Every structure is written in structure tokens, then in C-alpha cells.
Length: 173
Ligand SMILES: NC(=O)c1ccc[n+]([C@@H]2O[C@H](COP(=O)([O-])OP(=O)(O)OC[C@H]3O[C@@H](n4cnc5c(N)ncnc54)[C@H](OP(=O)(O)O)[C@@H]3O)[C@@H](O)[C@H]2O)c1
Image: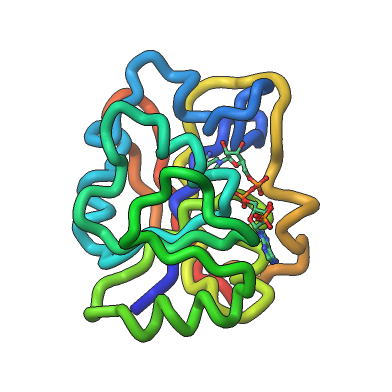
């Protein structure tokens, strides 16, 4: 099992739009298929994310994570959270639950920055994957300084996606 991010980041380095939505949603052409998320999640058993990133899914017209196990780092269980979702306030304990449930696939660490840092600090972030979206957003949230800037990264792969995004992956640590 590898824990992997696949964070979308704008050309000017923001992972959110100015109003706090994931940067890729500013692309009118965005779809989980064209951005490679469907393909990526076929290699995964589970998604892992912070409560802030999780909560909008509760109001989405369609559950975004299909049959994947869902793990949320948060101090409270948001109202309406389906029973199968595991919520825990302690990153190390949540990591243990992720490992116990794992069936051999990878884990998509969806974000946001503070949850990425929580698992990076535990030495559990195996791959920092980014999808550079082909536009500027002007302002928003960046990965840093929340994610430690001394993170050791070694290039692993890069590939262009249809329509202009670029997927890049680094091995961590
Ligand atoms: N561009 C992309 O691909 C992408 C992907 C995902 C998210 N995002 C964006 O990222 C933003 C959210 O990022 P974020 O960093 O603010 O929030 P987040 O990581 O999604 O969630 C933060 C919450 O997780 C819990 N948490 C985080 N670190 C913790 C720790 N060390 N110990 C215990 N609990 C911890 C806390 O929950 P409690 O408050 O319940 O204690 C905290 O409030 C959103 O605007 C979202 O749109 C972008």
C-alpha cells in the first residue's frame, strides 16, 4: 500500500480558488475522467482526507468515492456522514485503521494541505502527486507553508493529460 496525493494546483501555485474550492473546479472542462481521477482511483482501495475536504461531499448530487473505503481526519463526525466512513481525530490512529483495512491497493490522500502535512509528518506520505492545471487562479490556498518545505522529493514521472493538465509525481522522503 502506498499513500499518494494527486492534488490539483494552478499554474500560479494555488490548490484552491479564491473562494476555497479545489483549483480544478475552475476549469469548465473538468471531469474526473479527463483529469485521470477515475483511472487513478482504480488503483486505490481507499481515500483519506481532512474533514474540511470531506464535508462538501455530503451535499454532492453523487457520492464521489464509489466503492472505495473512506477515512476522514477530524474531531467530529459531520452530520449525515454514512456509517461506513471512518472518522478519527488522531492521525496515527487513523493511519492504523487505514492499514488494517487495506486489501493491497493504494490510498488516495485527497487533501487538503493540513491533512497532507499530518501524514507526511508521520512518514506515511509515499508519493506527492500533483496535477498542474493549465490556468491561473490569482489567489487561494497553497500547499506551503502548511506542508513542510524541507520535504525531500525525488522525481518519478510526468505525463500530459488531454486538454492541457500535467500530472507530476515525486517520491517522498
Ligand atoms: N486542489 C485539490 O486537489 C484539493 C484537494 C483537496 C482539498 N482541496 C482544498 O483544500 C482545502 C482544505 O484544506 P485544509 O488543509 O484547510 O483542510 P483539510 O486538511 O481538508 O481538513 C482540515 C481538518 O482536518 C483535521 N486535521 C487536519 N490536520 C490534523 C491533525 N494534525 N490532527 C488532527 N486533526 C487534523 C481537522 O479537523 P477538525 O477541525 O474536525 O478537528 C482540520 O480542521 C479546501 O479549500 C479544499 O477545496 C484541494
